[in-house]
Image (cartoon, rainbow, N blue to C red; front, side, top):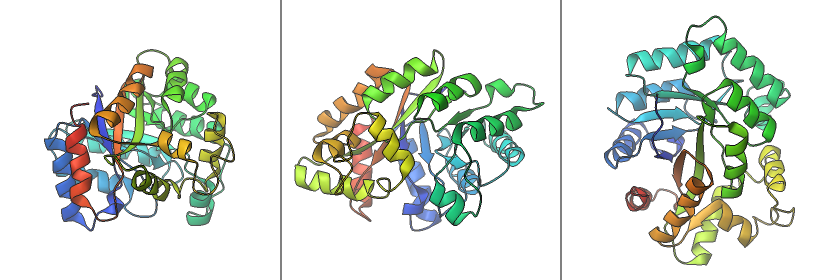
Length: 287
């Protein structure tokens, strides 16, 4: 499987049912994006909604970003990945991640293990005894160097989330050649800094309470002050590209210049503003 240059990242949980999901899938496909990535949280089950989105598209790849390793055992993930690709023309990418303590222990009732050993064991189980396992379309959520090294050794690559072009450059070096580096980047076509940053702070509020991301951001050079009170302007501007379409495109291209092989645009918009969301995708489709 070859991963194209540009994708979209968007949660199906933001849609009001199947018809809206199907319409959005068509919008993404019609504007030439290569892959639609989606998360797994409290809403739709990952493989079920992947199958639905694959059934509503013809060429578009669908990638989990991410499916939690605590949601299903490795054998189930393996069979789900293989089944979806057999049924829908090799268009499913299995993006895996270790999720977060509140989701794993609070929601699922499991014990959160050390991330890198847990992921390594899970990948070993997925690939065990399977012919062609090294070519499975699997990538993992990786931010720190140890997880990035694991991604480079055992999968097709990494799907970093909430990062910067500087982190992209470091990740590209760690992953090594011939690996996917599929970056998620939040964007909004809004030229007013007050409105743009308000949208950014609302979007990032759910992540600012999670230790995994806070530790990652501190490792990128942000300070505790940057992560306080909804995030400093500098932090918000780094996490959510805003401005004119050309200004946003310039920020996206910085990831490619740093070594990204794929960038997934996450449109940030007012709740329920479907037309605004779709306008962002139209404006950035030729990045």
